[in-house]
Length: 135
Length: 384
Image: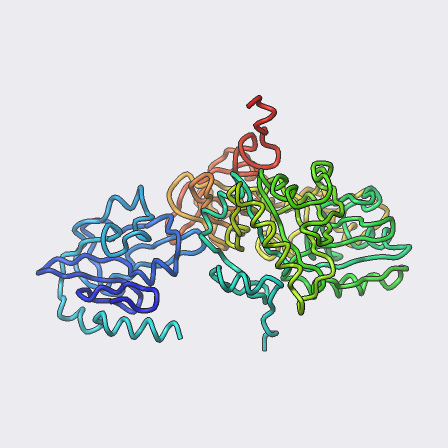
């Protein structure tokens, strides 16, 4: 769906810190939302986590830097990093251009997605959350 | 409570086309298209900035020169009419009250342009210190709109709508002209490192911004063929940082002296007297203990204000300004380090979010001055 000026794909889950997660079986892909990339604008550097790192939901696992500011990446799920988006090193602007696609940040082997879900929002809930922030 | 937010003459334009931010109590554009494209427009072509939020004061009277020699650090007697210079005002301890550009309009009339964040403080300081001089200090910010047109195509852009020959106004000189029929004062100065002008649209009160809007729109139209971009405060900050220019409140303040900030060229210690002279003379004699330096990141990461600077497992200083440099495409910073560490081409570390990243101490400006900035080789001089 599209709310205000922001894309919020229906099939993803969201954190209040503006990360998205797409889970299939034991594997999840995470990234930052359209709202997050638009707020940061002009991403010039993404500090990605290291493969094999064990991470806990809501923990800072890296950062996204724009010209003007820096923002933590808080993982929306717990587990182990199995892959990071190597392309972001050369092309951090992918986060702006395609936040839900080529701008993905990490793949994670899920530890307990049912538990993670308790803190995550559906697209509809996240849309309402964005609206409340913009008011 | 904070004072109510202020707006400039161009507020309507900014609100319609820009991403807004609050700066020094003003609702200002942070960017329109984006910091990087706006920054590069100024380096390669031309950009226009609304900087009407800055403070502007006219100082006049038979003792205005004597007064300004007393309250500022540069030599005002050397400033002939229609010339401008960069300068500072200091407190008795030699700390920087503010930095500004002073223009001499007439033998007994000066025009001072200082930081928006110091509008009130500077005016009060000027008034307070002028009491024993035959001089008048008049705050005129709200009756004059101020734009900066910066970049290698700035002169060509403005010449299209000016009724006098702008090439006659050299760097740090000023003059009067008409732009699109409106009387403006302009100085060949700026805060980007590039050639360009700062334009003052005279007699245009905030309550009736039509004249200011007309001049702004005319410049945008004239600059179209050169790729002009309206630029926000974001690009203004990255441009001045690349040029190695100070931002008051970040790189200089009342606890920093102009000598530490490497602004010694505007401190004329041979002048008979001025506020802060004794302290600055003493510091000059004893030698400054710390200095402002430029840092270019050799590793990934973007330095930001307050990040620590390390060398040989010791904290030696602090970043006061930092950003991503669109021209160098890496992180750059301004930092203060002990004088003995302020060695060009030496390596230090910047603590970026708990990790130490390598940086090189470099000379200002950050960019290659043969390719960028007002000293660049013009295409004419290389025979193109």
